[in-house]
Length: 215
Image (tube, rainbow, N blue to C red; front, top):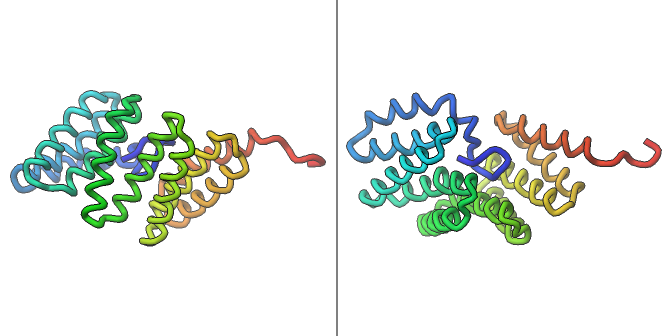
């Protein structure tokens, strides 16, 4: 779960329509694991409706249960997909860095390269919004390299879109447009809903660029 225009991972608005059924379905899961899964799904529903504190509370509850159960993958997914994104959105950068570092460590230990790529992308976004564009670009490029190594088109497109936003923040409009075009092409090819957002960003960037002489 990543905020629109903020970083990589599933866009919250894309998950929102199916989030409540997912919660209802997973409540029937086995014991505390089912409870943790349901809380994990409920977090995005809360903060998508503007209840950021409520979203954080249920995600922290889920994280506590995953820790009690020794479910490291569950811990990493909550840290990345929930708490990291919300903390970045609310400007709580040190707290976001802490949970994203935990996610990166766990994904690395488990050999989950897709999770590691998403966590790198989200960490890049944390650096970008806090003003460290050099470190942001480094994280995004690492995410892109991992995504290509595991042939994940969706993660690759998110990394490219993030690189485009980073280039735009650095004032490199042509570079930004190139990365966004690549991302848009992939999103369109795989039928991802993110295509609409990237198309809008690319259109706005194109309109903002000065016309070429003689055009």
